[in-house]
Image 1 (cartoon, rainbow, N blue to C red):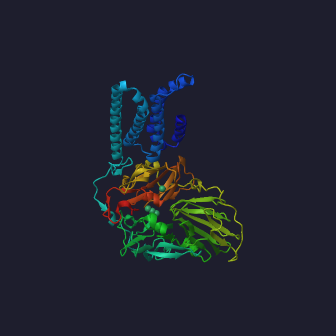
Image 2 (image 1 turned 135 degrees about the horizontal axis):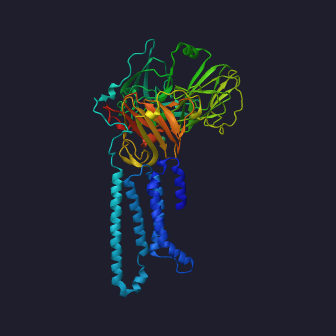
Image 3 (image 1 turned 90 degrees about the horizontal axis):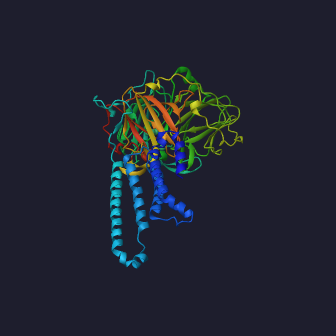
Length: 621
Ligand code: C2O
Ligand code: CU
Protein backbone atom coordinates (compact mmCIF):
# COMPACT_ATOMS: atom_id res chain seq x y z
CA UNK A 1 0.00 0.00 0.00
CA UNK A 2 2.82 2.34 0.87
CA UNK A 3 4.40 1.71 -2.52
CA UNK A 4 1.08 2.39 -4.24
CA UNK A 5 0.82 5.68 -2.36
CA UNK A 6 4.32 6.69 -3.36
CA UNK A 7 3.61 6.00 -7.01
CA UNK A 8 0.27 7.84 -7.01
CA UNK A 9 1.81 10.86 -5.27
CA UNK A 10 4.63 10.90 -7.82
CA UNK A 11 2.06 10.94 -10.62
CA UNK A 12 0.01 13.70 -8.98
CA UNK A 13 3.16 15.72 -8.44
CA UNK A 14 3.33 16.17 -12.20
CA UNK A 15 0.27 18.43 -11.88
CA UNK A 16 2.00 20.70 -9.40
CA UNK A 17 3.25 20.96 -5.85
CA UNK A 18 -0.17 22.19 -4.70
CA UNK A 19 -1.61 18.75 -5.27
CA UNK A 20 0.93 16.84 -3.19
CA UNK A 21 2.42 19.19 -0.59
CA UNK A 22 0.78 17.63 2.48
CA UNK A 23 1.40 14.14 1.15
CA UNK A 24 5.10 14.75 0.51
CA UNK A 25 5.78 16.69 3.70
CA UNK A 26 3.63 14.76 6.16
CA UNK A 27 1.61 11.82 4.86
CA UNK A 28 4.39 9.84 3.20
CA UNK A 29 7.20 10.53 5.72
CA UNK A 30 4.89 9.60 8.59
CA UNK A 31 3.72 6.47 6.84
CA UNK A 32 7.30 5.66 5.81
CA UNK A 33 8.59 5.96 9.38
CA UNK A 34 5.75 3.90 10.83
CA UNK A 35 6.06 1.27 8.12
CA UNK A 36 9.83 1.03 8.62
CA UNK A 37 9.33 0.55 12.36
CA UNK A 38 6.77 -2.14 11.65
CA UNK A 39 9.13 -3.96 9.30
CA UNK A 40 11.93 -3.85 11.86
CA UNK A 41 9.81 -4.88 14.84
CA UNK A 42 7.30 -7.26 13.35
CA UNK A 43 9.19 -8.44 10.29
CA UNK A 44 11.69 -10.85 11.94
CA UNK A 45 8.97 -12.41 14.09
CA UNK A 46 6.63 -12.92 11.19
CA UNK A 47 9.41 -14.41 9.11
CA UNK A 48 10.37 -16.71 11.95
CA UNK A 49 6.74 -17.75 12.38
CA UNK A 50 6.60 -18.59 8.72
CA UNK A 51 9.52 -20.90 9.18
CA UNK A 52 7.63 -22.58 12.00
CA UNK A 53 9.37 -20.84 14.91
CA UNK A 54 6.89 -19.15 17.25
CA UNK A 55 3.45 -17.72 16.42
CA UNK A 56 4.85 -14.37 15.21
CA UNK A 57 3.05 -12.39 17.89
CA UNK A 58 4.53 -9.92 20.29
CA UNK A 59 3.20 -6.70 21.79
CA UNK A 60 5.80 -4.64 19.93
CA UNK A 61 4.99 -6.27 16.61
CA UNK A 62 1.23 -5.79 16.97
CA UNK A 63 1.56 -2.18 18.05
CA UNK A 64 4.00 -1.31 15.27
CA UNK A 65 1.90 -2.89 12.53
CA UNK A 66 -1.28 -1.18 13.72
CA UNK A 67 0.55 2.14 14.06
CA UNK A 68 1.64 1.91 10.44
CA UNK A 69 -2.04 1.47 9.63
CA UNK A 70 -2.97 4.55 11.68
CA UNK A 71 -0.30 6.57 9.91
CA UNK A 72 -1.63 5.50 6.52
CA UNK A 73 -5.15 6.46 7.56
CA UNK A 74 -4.03 9.76 9.08
CA UNK A 75 -2.38 10.77 5.80
CA UNK A 76 -5.65 10.22 3.95
CA UNK A 77 -7.62 12.12 6.58
CA UNK A 78 -5.25 15.10 6.33
CA UNK A 79 -5.70 15.20 2.58
CA UNK A 80 -9.46 15.00 3.00
CA UNK A 81 -9.94 17.44 5.89
CA UNK A 82 -7.10 19.90 5.47
CA UNK A 83 -5.31 19.70 2.14
CA UNK A 84 -3.20 22.63 0.99
CA UNK A 85 -1.32 24.31 2.54
CA UNK A 86 0.06 22.05 5.23
CA UNK A 87 0.57 24.02 8.44
CA UNK A 88 2.71 23.16 11.48
CA UNK A 89 -0.49 22.88 13.53
CA UNK A 90 -1.91 20.27 11.19
CA UNK A 91 1.32 18.29 11.34
CA UNK A 92 1.34 18.56 15.15
CA UNK A 93 -2.25 17.39 15.51
CA UNK A 94 -1.79 14.52 13.09
CA UNK A 95 1.41 13.17 14.57
CA UNK A 96 0.01 13.43 18.10
CA UNK A 97 -3.14 11.56 17.08
CA UNK A 98 -1.11 8.76 15.52
CA UNK A 99 0.96 8.64 18.76
CA UNK A 100 -2.28 8.47 20.74
CA UNK A 101 -3.37 5.55 18.61
CA UNK A 102 -0.07 3.78 19.26
CA UNK A 103 -0.33 4.39 23.02
CA UNK A 104 -3.88 3.17 23.28
CA UNK A 105 -2.99 0.10 21.28
CA UNK A 106 0.00 -0.58 23.49
CA UNK A 107 -2.22 -0.34 26.57
CA UNK A 108 -4.83 -2.66 25.11
CA UNK A 109 -2.27 -5.21 23.93
CA UNK A 110 -0.23 -5.31 27.13
CA UNK A 111 -3.14 -5.21 29.60
CA UNK A 112 -2.66 -8.20 31.98
CA UNK A 113 -5.10 -11.02 31.44
CA UNK A 114 -7.14 -11.46 34.65
CA UNK A 115 -6.93 -15.24 34.94
CA UNK A 116 -3.13 -15.35 34.76
CA UNK A 117 -2.82 -12.51 37.28
CA UNK A 118 -4.81 -14.60 39.76
CA UNK A 119 -2.51 -17.58 39.32
CA UNK A 120 0.65 -15.57 39.83
CA UNK A 121 -0.03 -14.21 43.30
CA UNK A 122 3.63 -14.32 44.22
CA UNK A 123 4.52 -11.90 41.48
CA UNK A 124 1.76 -9.46 42.35
CA UNK A 125 3.96 -6.60 43.64
CA UNK A 126 6.16 -6.72 40.57
CA UNK A 127 3.11 -6.78 38.29
CA UNK A 128 1.64 -3.79 40.08
CA UNK A 129 4.89 -1.93 39.61
CA UNK A 130 4.92 -2.82 35.94
CA UNK A 131 1.34 -1.67 35.49
CA UNK A 132 1.97 1.61 37.20
CA UNK A 133 5.00 2.22 34.98
CA UNK A 134 2.82 1.52 31.98
CA UNK A 135 0.23 3.88 33.41
CA UNK A 136 2.83 6.56 33.84
CA UNK A 137 3.90 6.23 30.21
CA UNK A 138 0.29 6.17 29.06
CA UNK A 139 -0.71 9.22 31.08
CA UNK A 140 2.30 11.24 30.01
CA UNK A 141 1.78 10.24 26.40
CA UNK A 142 -1.91 10.99 26.65
CA UNK A 143 -1.23 14.39 28.15
CA UNK A 144 1.22 15.15 25.32
CA UNK A 145 -1.32 14.12 22.72
CA UNK A 146 -4.09 16.21 24.27
CA UNK A 147 -1.87 19.27 24.59
CA UNK A 148 -0.50 18.97 21.07
CA UNK A 149 -3.95 18.43 19.58
CA UNK A 150 -5.40 21.34 21.54
CA UNK A 151 -2.54 23.65 20.64
CA UNK A 152 -2.67 22.58 17.01
CA UNK A 153 -6.41 23.07 16.75
CA UNK A 154 -6.14 26.46 18.41
CA UNK A 155 -3.40 27.46 16.00
CA UNK A 156 -5.32 26.38 12.95
CA UNK A 157 -8.31 28.54 13.88
CA UNK A 158 -6.31 31.65 14.69
CA UNK A 159 -7.27 34.56 12.47
CA UNK A 160 -4.89 35.16 9.58
CA UNK A 161 -1.76 36.84 10.90
CA UNK A 162 -1.77 39.05 7.81
CA UNK A 163 -5.10 40.35 6.60
CA UNK A 164 -3.65 41.04 3.15
CA UNK A 165 -1.42 39.16 0.76
CA UNK A 166 0.83 41.15 -1.53
CA UNK A 167 1.50 38.72 -4.36
CA UNK A 168 5.11 39.91 -4.51
CA UNK A 169 4.21 43.58 -4.84
CA UNK A 170 4.77 46.35 -2.32
CA UNK A 171 2.71 46.65 0.85
CA UNK A 172 0.10 49.13 1.96
CA UNK A 173 1.13 52.73 1.47
CA UNK A 174 0.02 55.68 3.52
CA UNK A 175 -1.89 57.20 0.63
CA UNK A 176 -5.04 59.11 1.54
CA UNK A 177 -8.01 56.83 2.09
CA UNK A 178 -10.66 56.76 -0.61
CA UNK A 179 -14.07 55.40 0.35
CA UNK A 180 -15.93 53.06 -2.02
CA UNK A 181 -18.94 55.22 -1.22
CA UNK A 182 -17.34 57.87 -3.43
CA UNK A 183 -16.59 55.55 -6.32
CA UNK A 184 -19.91 56.11 -8.04
CA UNK A 185 -20.92 56.08 -11.70
CA UNK A 186 -21.41 58.96 -14.14
CA UNK A 187 -24.63 60.94 -13.82
CA UNK A 188 -25.20 61.69 -17.49
CA UNK A 189 -25.07 59.71 -20.72
CA UNK A 190 -22.35 60.17 -23.34
CA UNK A 191 -23.24 62.78 -26.00
CA UNK A 192 -26.13 61.41 -28.05
CA UNK A 193 -27.02 58.76 -25.47
CA UNK A 194 -30.24 58.51 -23.52
CA UNK A 195 -31.12 57.68 -19.93
CA UNK A 196 -32.58 54.22 -19.35
CA UNK A 197 -34.57 54.35 -16.15
CA UNK A 198 -35.91 51.31 -14.34
CA UNK A 199 -37.45 50.61 -10.99
CA UNK A 200 -36.89 47.06 -9.78
CA UNK A 201 -38.92 45.98 -6.79
CA UNK A 202 -37.73 42.84 -5.09
CA UNK A 203 -40.71 40.82 -3.93
CA UNK A 204 -42.01 37.35 -3.41
CA UNK A 205 -44.35 36.08 -6.09
CA UNK A 206 -45.81 32.87 -7.41
CA UNK A 207 -44.67 32.43 -10.97
CA UNK A 208 -46.47 30.16 -13.43
CA UNK A 209 -44.32 28.43 -16.04
CA UNK A 210 -45.75 27.53 -19.49
CA UNK A 211 -46.08 23.91 -18.35
CA UNK A 212 -48.42 25.07 -15.62
CA UNK A 213 -45.88 24.49 -12.89
CA UNK A 214 -45.96 27.08 -10.15
CA UNK A 215 -42.88 28.37 -8.42
CA UNK A 216 -42.64 30.26 -5.17
CA UNK A 217 -40.09 32.71 -6.42
CA UNK A 218 -38.23 35.75 -5.23
CA UNK A 219 -38.50 38.21 -8.07
CA UNK A 220 -37.74 41.64 -9.40
CA UNK A 221 -41.14 43.16 -10.29
CA UNK A 222 -42.94 39.84 -9.95
CA UNK A 223 -41.18 38.42 -13.03
CA UNK A 224 -38.60 35.69 -13.47
CA UNK A 225 -36.22 36.57 -14.99
CA UNK A 226 -36.53 40.19 -13.89
CA UNK A 227 -37.13 42.97 -16.42
CA UNK A 228 -34.66 42.83 -19.31
CA UNK A 229 -32.40 45.86 -19.18
CA UNK A 230 -31.12 46.95 -22.56
CA UNK A 231 -29.18 49.99 -23.69
CA UNK A 232 -27.07 51.30 -26.49
CA UNK A 233 -23.44 52.00 -25.84
CA UNK A 234 -23.06 55.38 -24.14
CA UNK A 235 -26.53 55.42 -22.58
CA UNK A 236 -26.90 56.02 -18.88
CA UNK A 237 -28.48 53.16 -16.94
CA UNK A 238 -30.29 54.23 -13.81
CA UNK A 239 -31.98 51.58 -11.72
CA UNK A 240 -33.81 52.19 -8.49
CA UNK A 241 -33.87 49.00 -6.44
CA UNK A 242 -36.67 48.74 -3.90
CA UNK A 243 -37.17 45.90 -1.51
CA UNK A 244 -40.81 45.09 -0.83
CA UNK A 245 -40.68 41.92 1.25
CA UNK A 246 -37.42 39.99 0.91
CA UNK A 247 -36.63 39.96 4.59
CA UNK A 248 -33.03 38.79 4.13
CA UNK A 249 -32.34 41.89 2.07
CA UNK A 250 -31.23 42.32 -1.55
CA UNK A 251 -28.82 44.20 -3.79
CA UNK A 252 -28.12 44.39 -7.51
CA UNK A 253 -24.79 43.19 -8.82
CA UNK A 254 -23.99 43.76 -12.51
CA UNK A 255 -22.28 40.51 -13.34
CA UNK A 256 -19.38 41.02 -15.73
CA UNK A 257 -20.07 44.73 -16.10
CA UNK A 258 -17.10 46.78 -14.96
CA UNK A 259 -19.07 49.46 -13.14
CA UNK A 260 -17.39 51.84 -10.69
CA UNK A 261 -17.00 49.99 -7.40
CA UNK A 262 -19.72 51.90 -5.55
CA UNK A 263 -22.30 50.50 -8.02
CA UNK A 264 -21.15 46.89 -7.66
CA UNK A 265 -23.83 45.73 -5.24
CA UNK A 266 -21.62 43.78 -2.82
CA UNK A 267 -23.31 44.13 0.57
CA UNK A 268 -21.03 44.95 3.46
CA UNK A 269 -18.38 46.07 0.98
CA UNK A 270 -19.76 48.56 -1.55
CA UNK A 271 -23.12 49.27 0.09
CA UNK A 272 -25.44 48.16 2.84
CA UNK A 273 -27.95 45.44 2.10
CA UNK A 274 -31.29 46.89 1.01
CA UNK A 275 -33.80 45.82 3.67
CA UNK A 276 -37.59 45.68 3.18
CA UNK A 277 -38.88 49.23 2.74
CA UNK A 278 -35.48 50.56 1.74
CA UNK A 279 -34.10 51.45 -1.67
CA UNK A 280 -30.86 52.15 -3.49
CA UNK A 281 -30.17 53.85 -6.83
CA UNK A 282 -27.55 52.44 -9.19
CA UNK A 283 -26.27 54.66 -11.97
CA UNK A 284 -23.59 53.90 -14.52
CA UNK A 285 -22.77 54.53 -18.12
CA UNK A 286 -23.19 51.64 -20.54
CA UNK A 287 -19.73 51.87 -22.05
CA UNK A 288 -19.26 48.12 -22.44
CA UNK A 289 -21.11 46.33 -25.25
CA UNK A 290 -22.34 42.77 -24.90
CA UNK A 291 -24.34 40.22 -22.92
CA UNK A 292 -24.38 40.48 -19.13
CA UNK A 293 -26.77 39.84 -16.29
CA UNK A 294 -27.70 41.18 -12.92
CA UNK A 295 -28.51 39.42 -9.67
CA UNK A 296 -28.76 40.00 -5.97
CA UNK A 297 -25.49 39.65 -4.13
CA UNK A 298 -26.99 39.24 -0.70
CA UNK A 299 -27.44 35.63 0.40
CA UNK A 300 -27.12 35.03 -3.30
CA UNK A 301 -26.96 31.24 -2.92
CA UNK A 302 -30.65 31.53 -1.98
CA UNK A 303 -31.75 34.71 -3.73
CA UNK A 304 -30.40 34.03 -7.22
CA UNK A 305 -31.59 30.46 -7.11
CA UNK A 306 -35.09 31.62 -6.18
CA UNK A 307 -35.24 34.08 -9.06
CA UNK A 308 -33.55 37.38 -8.19
CA UNK A 309 -31.80 37.78 -11.54
CA UNK A 310 -32.30 39.36 -14.95
CA UNK A 311 -30.43 40.19 -18.15
CA UNK A 312 -28.42 43.23 -19.21
CA UNK A 313 -27.63 43.65 -22.91
CA UNK A 314 -25.79 46.63 -24.35
CA UNK A 315 -25.72 47.04 -28.11
CA UNK A 316 -23.15 49.03 -30.06
CA UNK A 317 -24.17 52.54 -31.07
CA UNK A 318 -21.95 52.49 -34.12
CA UNK A 319 -24.43 53.41 -36.88
CA UNK A 320 -23.83 50.54 -39.26
CA UNK A 321 -23.99 47.85 -36.61
CA UNK A 322 -26.96 49.47 -34.94
CA UNK A 323 -28.79 49.36 -38.28
CA UNK A 324 -28.00 45.72 -38.63
CA UNK A 325 -29.46 45.14 -35.20
CA UNK A 326 -32.53 47.18 -35.94
CA UNK A 327 -33.21 45.33 -39.19
CA UNK A 328 -36.70 43.92 -39.05
CA UNK A 329 -35.59 40.49 -40.17
CA UNK A 330 -32.91 40.25 -37.52
CA UNK A 331 -33.41 37.86 -34.64
CA UNK A 332 -31.61 38.63 -31.37
CA UNK A 333 -32.68 36.51 -28.40
CA UNK A 334 -31.41 36.79 -24.85
CA UNK A 335 -31.65 33.35 -23.23
CA UNK A 336 -30.86 33.09 -19.55
CA UNK A 337 -30.84 29.43 -18.47
CA UNK A 338 -32.07 28.88 -14.93
CA UNK A 339 -33.05 25.77 -13.01
CA UNK A 340 -35.91 25.78 -10.50
CA UNK A 341 -35.87 22.64 -8.39
CA UNK A 342 -34.70 20.49 -11.25
CA UNK A 343 -36.78 22.19 -13.98
CA UNK A 344 -34.60 23.90 -16.57
CA UNK A 345 -36.05 27.15 -17.89
CA UNK A 346 -34.80 29.20 -20.82
CA UNK A 347 -35.77 32.88 -20.64
CA UNK A 348 -38.31 31.91 -18.01
CA UNK A 349 -39.97 29.13 -20.05
CA UNK A 350 -39.82 25.44 -19.29
CA UNK A 351 -40.41 22.63 -21.75
CA UNK A 352 -39.87 23.25 -25.44
CA UNK A 353 -40.33 26.65 -27.07
CA UNK A 354 -40.75 27.00 -30.82
CA UNK A 355 -40.31 30.12 -32.87
CA UNK A 356 -40.88 30.76 -36.56
CA UNK A 357 -37.72 32.15 -38.13
CA UNK A 358 -37.56 32.83 -41.88
CA UNK A 359 -34.59 31.27 -43.70
CA UNK A 360 -31.74 33.75 -44.12
CA UNK A 361 -32.45 35.61 -40.86
CA UNK A 362 -29.24 36.81 -39.19
CA UNK A 363 -29.62 35.30 -35.74
CA UNK A 364 -27.86 35.92 -32.43
CA UNK A 365 -28.59 33.75 -29.39
CA UNK A 366 -27.25 35.21 -26.15
CA UNK A 367 -26.93 32.36 -23.68
CA UNK A 368 -26.50 33.15 -20.01
CA UNK A 369 -25.95 30.56 -17.29
CA UNK A 370 -27.63 31.91 -14.16
CA UNK A 371 -27.25 28.61 -12.29
CA UNK A 372 -24.47 27.44 -10.00
CA UNK A 373 -23.51 24.47 -12.15
CA UNK A 374 -22.24 24.44 -15.73
CA UNK A 375 -24.60 23.74 -18.61
CA UNK A 376 -23.86 21.88 -21.80
CA UNK A 377 -25.24 23.70 -24.81
CA UNK A 378 -25.65 22.23 -28.29
CA UNK A 379 -26.89 24.14 -31.32
CA UNK A 380 -28.04 21.50 -33.80
CA UNK A 381 -29.03 21.98 -37.43
CA UNK A 382 -26.70 24.79 -38.47
CA UNK A 383 -23.07 25.79 -38.45
CA UNK A 384 -22.50 28.79 -36.19
CA UNK A 385 -19.86 30.97 -34.60
CA UNK A 386 -19.28 31.76 -30.94
CA UNK A 387 -19.09 35.50 -31.55
CA UNK A 388 -18.61 36.60 -27.96
CA UNK A 389 -17.75 35.08 -24.60
CA UNK A 390 -18.78 36.87 -21.41
CA UNK A 391 -19.85 39.85 -23.49
CA UNK A 392 -16.48 40.33 -25.19
CA UNK A 393 -16.11 39.67 -28.93
CA UNK A 394 -13.70 36.91 -29.99
CA UNK A 395 -11.18 37.54 -32.76
CA UNK A 396 -12.22 35.81 -36.01
CA UNK A 397 -14.18 32.95 -34.49
CA UNK A 398 -14.46 30.18 -37.05
CA UNK A 399 -17.63 28.38 -38.06
CA UNK A 400 -18.29 25.20 -36.08
CA UNK A 401 -20.97 22.54 -36.02
CA UNK A 402 -21.59 19.33 -34.14
CA UNK A 403 -19.88 20.54 -31.01
CA UNK A 404 -20.97 20.85 -27.40
CA UNK A 405 -20.38 24.09 -25.53
CA UNK A 406 -19.51 24.04 -21.84
CA UNK A 407 -21.05 27.18 -20.33
CA UNK A 408 -19.73 27.94 -16.84
CA UNK A 409 -22.00 29.16 -14.07
CA UNK A 410 -22.37 32.91 -14.55
CA UNK A 411 -20.89 32.78 -18.07
CA UNK A 412 -22.32 33.93 -21.40
CA UNK A 413 -21.91 32.85 -25.03
CA UNK A 414 -23.27 34.74 -28.03
CA UNK A 415 -23.93 32.30 -30.89
CA UNK A 416 -24.46 33.75 -34.38
CA UNK A 417 -25.59 32.18 -37.64
CA UNK A 418 -27.78 32.72 -40.67
CA UNK A 419 -31.03 30.82 -40.30
CA UNK A 420 -30.95 27.89 -42.77
CA UNK A 421 -34.11 26.60 -44.46
CA UNK A 422 -34.17 23.60 -42.15
CA UNK A 423 -35.02 23.65 -38.43
CA UNK A 424 -32.48 24.61 -35.79
CA UNK A 425 -32.54 23.32 -32.22
CA UNK A 426 -30.94 24.68 -29.11
CA UNK A 427 -30.46 21.76 -26.71
CA UNK A 428 -29.49 22.26 -23.08
CA UNK A 429 -27.87 19.41 -21.13
CA UNK A 430 -28.65 16.99 -23.96
CA UNK A 431 -32.37 17.13 -23.23
CA UNK A 432 -33.83 16.77 -26.72
CA UNK A 433 -37.39 17.24 -25.50
CA UNK A 434 -36.78 20.71 -24.12
CA UNK A 435 -34.94 23.76 -25.38
CA UNK A 436 -35.64 26.10 -28.26
CA UNK A 437 -36.66 25.29 -31.84
CA UNK A 438 -36.35 27.76 -34.69
CA UNK A 439 -38.68 26.82 -37.54
CA UNK A 440 -37.95 28.12 -41.03
CA UNK A 441 -41.46 27.57 -42.32
CA UNK A 442 -43.63 29.44 -39.91
CA UNK A 443 -45.41 27.82 -37.07
CA UNK A 444 -45.79 24.47 -38.80
CA UNK A 445 -44.53 21.87 -36.36
CA UNK A 446 -41.76 19.88 -37.93
CA UNK A 447 -40.81 16.56 -36.56
CA UNK A 448 -37.23 17.04 -37.60
CA UNK A 449 -35.37 14.39 -35.75
CA UNK A 450 -32.51 15.58 -33.53
CA UNK A 451 -29.63 13.19 -33.17
CA UNK A 452 -28.39 12.32 -29.70
CA UNK A 453 -26.13 15.24 -28.77
CA UNK A 454 -24.46 13.67 -25.79
CA UNK A 455 -21.34 12.38 -27.54
CA UNK A 456 -20.54 15.55 -29.45
CA UNK A 457 -17.03 16.72 -28.58
CA UNK A 458 -16.64 19.86 -26.51
CA UNK A 459 -15.39 23.03 -28.20
CA UNK A 460 -12.18 24.19 -26.53
CA UNK A 461 -12.26 27.98 -26.40
CA UNK A 462 -8.53 28.08 -25.67
CA UNK A 463 -7.95 26.91 -29.24
CA UNK A 464 -10.81 28.77 -30.97
CA UNK A 465 -10.47 31.88 -33.11
CA UNK A 466 -7.31 33.66 -34.19
CA UNK A 467 -4.64 35.13 -31.90
CA UNK A 468 -4.30 38.91 -31.75
CA UNK A 469 -2.15 41.38 -29.88
CA UNK A 470 -2.97 41.70 -26.18
CA UNK A 471 -2.43 44.94 -24.23
CA UNK A 472 0.28 43.65 -21.90
CA UNK A 473 3.16 41.26 -21.57
CA UNK A 474 2.63 38.91 -18.67
CA UNK A 475 6.35 38.79 -17.95
CA UNK A 476 5.89 42.31 -16.57
CA UNK A 477 3.35 41.19 -13.95
CA UNK A 478 3.53 43.30 -10.80
CA UNK A 479 1.75 40.78 -8.60
CA UNK A 480 1.09 37.08 -8.75
CA UNK A 481 -1.53 35.49 -6.51
CA UNK A 482 -2.10 31.76 -6.24
CA UNK A 483 -5.47 30.46 -5.14
CA UNK A 484 -5.65 26.77 -4.30
CA UNK A 485 -9.26 25.63 -4.15
CA UNK A 486 -10.13 22.68 -1.96
CA UNK A 487 -12.44 21.35 0.69
CA UNK A 488 -11.43 21.28 4.31
CA UNK A 489 -12.26 22.15 7.87
CA UNK A 490 -12.04 25.93 8.26
CA UNK A 491 -13.81 28.84 9.86
CA UNK A 492 -16.58 30.34 7.74
CA UNK A 493 -18.08 33.49 9.22
CA UNK A 494 -16.54 32.43 12.53
CA UNK A 495 -17.97 28.90 12.55
CA UNK A 496 -15.88 25.76 12.07
CA UNK A 497 -17.26 24.21 8.89
CA UNK A 498 -16.38 21.58 6.32
CA UNK A 499 -15.82 24.46 3.96
CA UNK A 500 -14.95 25.24 0.38
CA UNK A 501 -11.55 26.76 0.96
CA UNK A 502 -9.04 29.00 -0.75
CA UNK A 503 -5.48 28.29 0.44
CA UNK A 504 -6.95 26.37 3.36
CA UNK A 505 -9.17 29.17 4.63
CA UNK A 506 -12.79 30.23 4.37
CA UNK A 507 -14.40 33.64 4.06
CA UNK A 508 -13.81 36.13 5.68
CA UNK A 509 -10.52 34.75 6.99
CA UNK A 510 -8.93 34.56 3.55
CA UNK A 511 -6.50 37.48 3.29
CA UNK A 512 -7.42 40.28 0.86
CA UNK A 513 -5.28 40.52 -2.27
CA UNK A 514 -3.66 43.93 -2.30
CA UNK A 515 -3.13 45.73 -5.61
CA UNK A 516 -2.18 49.24 -6.65
CA UNK A 517 -4.02 51.08 -9.42
CA UNK A 518 -2.23 50.22 -12.67
CA UNK A 519 -0.71 46.91 -11.52
CA UNK A 520 -0.55 44.02 -13.93
CA UNK A 521 -1.91 41.13 -11.89
CA UNK A 522 -1.59 37.42 -12.50
CA UNK A 523 -3.74 34.74 -10.90
CA UNK A 524 -2.95 31.05 -10.70
CA UNK A 525 -6.09 29.13 -9.79
CA UNK A 526 -5.63 25.49 -8.80
CA UNK A 527 -8.50 23.10 -8.17
CA UNK A 528 -7.57 20.30 -5.76
CA UNK A 529 -11.17 19.40 -5.08
CA UNK A 530 -13.58 17.02 -6.79
CA UNK A 531 -15.99 19.77 -7.86
CA UNK A 532 -15.88 22.39 -10.61
CA UNK A 533 -15.29 25.96 -9.45
CA UNK A 534 -16.43 28.77 -11.76
CA UNK A 535 -14.00 31.48 -10.72
CA UNK A 536 -15.33 35.03 -10.93
CA UNK A 537 -13.61 38.35 -10.28
CA UNK A 538 -15.77 41.45 -10.01
CA UNK A 539 -14.94 44.65 -11.85
CA UNK A 540 -12.34 43.30 -14.29
CA UNK A 541 -12.31 40.88 -17.20
CA UNK A 542 -9.32 38.55 -17.08
CA UNK A 543 -7.27 37.31 -20.02
CA UNK A 544 -6.83 33.52 -20.06
CA UNK A 545 -3.12 32.66 -20.40
CA UNK A 546 -3.09 28.90 -19.98
CA UNK A 547 -4.81 25.82 -18.65
CA UNK A 548 -2.70 23.03 -17.13
CA UNK A 549 0.39 24.65 -18.55
CA UNK A 550 -0.92 24.65 -22.10
CA UNK A 551 -1.05 28.18 -23.45
CA UNK A 552 -4.16 29.60 -24.99
CA UNK A 553 -3.55 29.63 -28.73
CA UNK A 554 -6.87 30.87 -30.08
CA UNK A 555 -8.44 34.31 -29.98
CA UNK A 556 -7.52 36.34 -26.92
CA UNK A 557 -10.08 35.09 -24.41
CA UNK A 558 -11.32 37.72 -21.96
CA UNK A 559 -13.73 36.33 -19.41
CA UNK A 560 -15.21 37.22 -16.07
CA UNK A 561 -16.01 33.62 -15.12
CA UNK A 562 -13.92 30.56 -15.97
CA UNK A 563 -14.53 26.99 -14.94
CA UNK A 564 -11.64 25.40 -13.11
CA UNK A 565 -12.46 21.72 -13.25
CA UNK A 566 -11.10 19.16 -10.77
CA UNK A 567 -7.33 18.83 -11.09
CA UNK A 568 -6.98 21.85 -13.37
CA UNK A 569 -4.67 24.83 -13.01
CA UNK A 570 -5.53 28.10 -14.80
CA UNK A 571 -3.35 31.13 -15.32
CA UNK A 572 -5.11 34.42 -16.04
CA UNK A 573 -4.07 38.08 -15.93
CA UNK A 574 -5.60 41.53 -15.87
CA UNK A 575 -4.64 45.16 -15.50
CA UNK A 576 -5.95 46.66 -12.25
CA UNK A 577 -7.55 49.85 -13.53
CA UNK A 578 -10.83 49.98 -11.64
CA UNK A 579 -10.13 51.08 -8.05
CA UNK A 580 -12.22 49.58 -5.32
CA UNK A 581 -12.74 46.56 -3.14
CA UNK A 582 -13.90 43.73 -5.36
CA UNK A 583 -15.31 40.34 -4.53
CA UNK A 584 -13.27 37.50 -6.00
CA UNK A 585 -15.13 34.22 -5.59
CA UNK A 586 -16.47 30.95 -6.82
CA UNK A 587 -19.71 31.49 -8.75
CA UNK A 588 -21.11 28.22 -7.57
CA UNK A 589 -22.97 30.37 -5.06
CA UNK A 590 -23.40 27.69 -2.37
CA UNK A 591 -19.61 27.23 -2.54
CA UNK A 592 -19.09 30.98 -2.07
CA UNK A 593 -21.47 30.85 0.88
CA UNK A 594 -19.44 27.98 2.34
CA UNK A 595 -16.26 29.99 2.33
CA UNK A 596 -14.91 30.25 -1.22
CA UNK A 597 -14.77 34.01 -1.48
CA UNK A 598 -12.19 36.72 -0.93
CA UNK A 599 -11.53 40.29 -1.98
CA UNK A 600 -9.24 42.13 -4.33
CA UNK A 601 -8.39 45.30 -2.46
CA UNK A 602 -6.90 48.41 -4.07
CA UNK A 603 -4.37 50.15 -1.89
CA UNK A 604 -5.95 53.09 -0.10
CA UNK A 605 -9.59 52.17 -0.74
CA UNK A 606 -11.75 51.79 2.36
CA UNK A 607 -15.32 50.80 3.01
CA UNK A 608 -17.71 52.31 5.54
CA UNK A 609 -20.07 49.36 5.11
CA UNK A 610 -17.99 46.58 6.67
CA UNK A 611 -19.94 44.64 9.24
CA UNK A 612 -23.10 46.55 8.35
CA UNK A 613 -26.25 44.74 7.26
CA UNK A 614 -25.09 41.26 6.53
CA UNK A 615 -21.49 41.67 7.53
CA UNK A 616 -18.48 41.67 5.31
CA UNK A 617 -19.63 38.41 3.80
CA UNK A 618 -21.02 39.80 0.61
CA UNK A 619 -22.81 36.54 0.08
CA UNK A 620 -23.53 36.37 3.83
CA UNK A 621 -26.69 35.56 5.64
CU1 C2O B 1 -22.36 37.03 -10.38
CU2 C2O B 1 -20.12 38.02 -7.10
O1 C2O B 1 -21.26 37.50 -8.71
CU1 CU C 1 -16.84 26.38 -6.26
